[in-house]
Amino acid sequence: MQLSDPKQQQTPRGRFAWREGGQPDGQPLVMIHGWPESSYCWEHVAAHLKPGFRIIAPDLRGLGDSERTPEQEHYRKQAMAQDVISLLDSIGITDFQLVGHDWGGIVAQEVALAIPDRVRRMVIMNIAIINNLRGNREVIEKVRAGSGAAYWYQHFMQTPDLPEAMIPGAEEAWLGFFLTTWNREPFPRDALDEYLRTFRIPGTARTSSNYYRTFPEDAKRWATTAGHRWPMPAMYVYGNKDKVIIPEYLNHIEECFESIRVEQVEAGHFLQEEQPAAVAGYLNDFLKTD
Picture 1: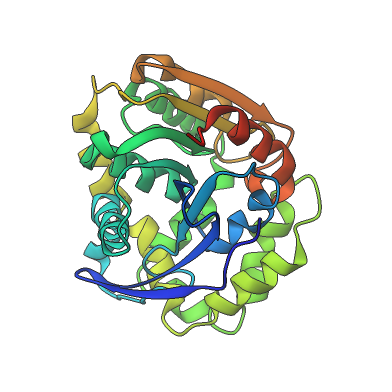
Picture 2: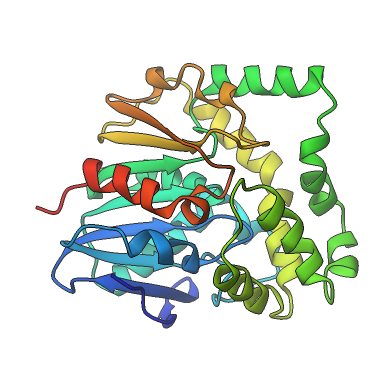
């Protein structure tokens, strides 16, 4: 199956773009992208998914073709989850299965916290589990014991006004550093071209950096979720060559779910583009079409 070109939807929370694919009467499958991508990141995975899904892939605020709200508070992940819920409500989606990668995996978890009765199954890919305080602390300890060099870009984006001054006009060098060097296989050129198109939309240097500028407020919120257990069946799929989301993120995650399945793919951080057939294979096995 293929995804549509971006559609636009005005919601009570703003204007959001989204792509759709599969069967109009299929089981709703909401797929949320991360940074620095857009809903296009699911294009090659969708080609390998089994029939029976209706894919809804939103562009998160500040990325893709969704609105470029400049104010930082809109990029707290709890607020971004409300954006997704507002979009789903606006297009008439009630119960659904949920997949999220990178920051989209964080937003997916916030969606599942907000409306757990509507999330039938959840898949998280290459990102922290927000209620896994023990494992996340072990990650911090390991990073602090080393150089922490892999995380330089996060500090760069958290620096006031610097990304806004340096990224515009240099989008291909900026995105290319991550998208073409964090993978073991060549990054699909069609995907890179699409992300370059949307990253060149004015204001994106600021709005994409706001994902990281809100991290301190997000972390304070997540510290309150210790002891939460996700009630819906869940799966964690990760690229085992990721330089940033290291294996320690998996420590203790079984304590965070009523039911969790863990699978790995021989890939870097952007596993859905590097190994779309392998990712789709796990999704086909875990997700339901009835």
